[in-house]
Image 1 (tube, rainbow, N blue to C red):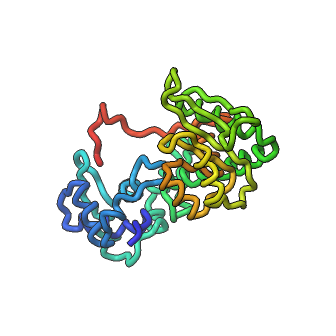
Image 2 (cartoon, rainbow, N blue to C red):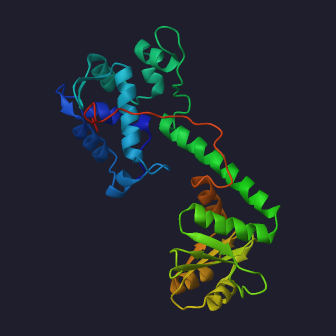
Length: 295
């Protein structure tokens, strides 16, 4: 099954501590995995940033919220014990939710602000997400809008501009020195990227600026494949549109790399090409060189 939401883990987390003994964090995780019958695949699912698993992120926030509400304590590193309030809630509340935790003053102080009145950005209003998931979702949504804007701007320029853009992006990505071929002699090759100084290792590029709803089929790929001078040479086909399944199959057979519009825009964002940074938000975590990791 899918990884449960962090608030859906409250009951299971406390159940793993209900004997009143001190338990290591890993034992509580095993309790949650058992209660929700999670598979190895479920546990390995990553957040969009691919820097942390969804499971670890949600268990971590479940732990944080229970601790802030005073339902669990951590007497030693990465070890937890249930409190008297935790036992009472576990035994009397059928379904523990964020509303349950909000009945505890320490939890309300945590989500509303610090004791000296300074406000913090901690919220449980969108109870389906952890703060990290919210941050990554909003970042993904902003990037989606940016991708659409990039493709729109590309379509406002000429095909020649697009060919130069693709070659320059390849250079930006570190693939080597590139050049746009002369239109009268390109024979289907729009650009060449030389991966070594003497030009022994070459990538042949075709860049086609189509409408985003167009589908590039196998014939276009075959034409490009026929234009590549050497059979085993590297080929890169870049378009603002998308590829059909037949085109993808042919490209796999010929070892041609395909980049569609969405992938192109994503690469431009990742390599700061055609975009600039407007804001930087630093999300910090515990320094494991100073503290032992409690995961």
